[in-house]
Amino acid sequence: MINIEFDKIDFDSRLKVECPATVANMVCGFDILGMALNDPCDIVEMNLSKEPGIRILHADEFDLPTDPVKNVAGAALLDLLHACDKQVGIDITITKQIKPGSGLGSSAASSAGAVVAANILLGKPFSNLDLVRFAMAGEKVASGVKHADNIAPCIMGGVTLIRSIFPLDIIQLSAPMLYVAVVHPQIEVRTSDARQILRKEVLLKDAIRQWGNIAGLVTGLLQGDFDLIGRSLEDVIIEPVRSILIPGFDEVKRLSNEAGALGGGISGSGPSIFMLCRNHANAESIALIMREIYDKLGIDCKTYVTTLNERGVRVA
Ligand code: HSE
Image (cartoon, rainbow, N blue to C red; front, side, top):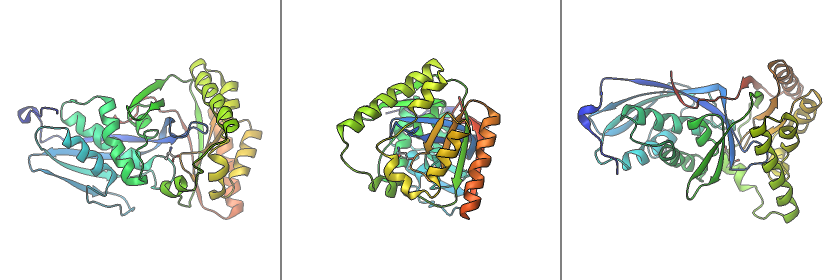
């Protein structure tokens, strides 16, 4: 239980934080690998109040719930307040630029931003691991399951490995400068649905291949070995099932790889697709290829050309 010292809290100050989009799974690391992006990001503004309760406002068009129990940021803040010995009130305004259901860690951005902002306003009594734990309550609201592969990179930045959830064990991996092309076809894939369609059992030969790829990807990141990163961006377990929910997926992957991307796949539970690239020019050309594919399919899409975000949630 954390002791809250009311006389040290500045109830007049309002804090604004930027909360990055994230790519969970990173192709082969279902639920255990994730990376933060510099674009897009959500904005969370917050102040503490002597009047108890969590009051949520949305400054966007998504019509998300404002009841703290049903709102991802609210659920995360309830867990945080539960760990405090006195109750403060929280007023939070969320402006989402990461569309819910995009596969870019929209729910994680709100809940991670909320707990990081509250922690700063409270004088930083909690560790990053505590914050990940609180924010995972938001993921439970969003998808029915506590997973940390969006939350951890959103809070800590860079690439994170979730070695274990219970107990929570998170490793930040150093990585070379990575450029990322992302396409978000404007269809919604709910994470809960994308999890439900997965097979519960895995063939040993597939597991072995996947272990090899995860180890290869982690080693490639640590050693800055782009070829090894590229070879390891293969998923023989989740992608074959989930990709059927994403029109144009095979073509995006094939043409991006032909155009020199290191590799990539479904971002989180989709429908966004990401491709890692060696440089900005390559990411730009791949974003154009992605757009052309969806133009031909008659599906609206949004593309991003961005980079690995090293900082995670930050004060704006
Ligand atoms: N690892 C999670 C999944 C991420 O793929 O279901 C959801 O964003």
